[in-house]
Length: 198
Image 1: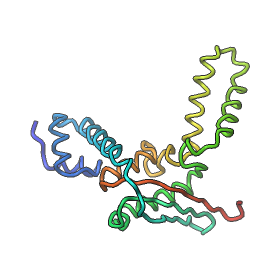
Image 2: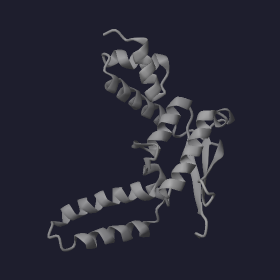
Image 3: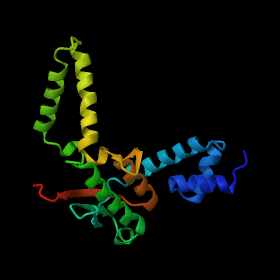
Image 4: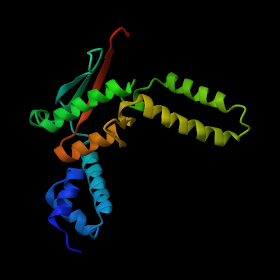
């Protein structure tokens, strides 16, 4: 199939991948746009996984103050070099993450940051809800695990759906940024302020 410049532009706009990578993905996918985008996503995930062990000592603190100045958030976003930290894309990512913290109210960065007693309380609550269901124990445990995953999506920043694109999680957004910018990127910490809340 003939790969046109328009096809490459469209794929590049959607994925943020390089021109050559887009052309190669389209050729490999025989012009199938969705398949090519998936190939690029997989390549981005692989690239991000390779970079995950690299140290992140540079970065910025992104901020967002909601209209009316009653709610705000700060997010420490780290990368490997000062050069990347100064790029508009990295700075926009930090701002988007701060906006996410204001809008979605995460309590933890990832499930690993949740205290074990909080997880246990949630599990007990879900088991109590299922106690009179008459379902076998192994089914109840599967339901509890499913509800726990939903809980993670609500309270963990990296698992939350991105407010600008519900089809992606915050971790997906960061992984794409890693693939585009070529450096490991880590959310170190965040804080959310709301007037009158402690």
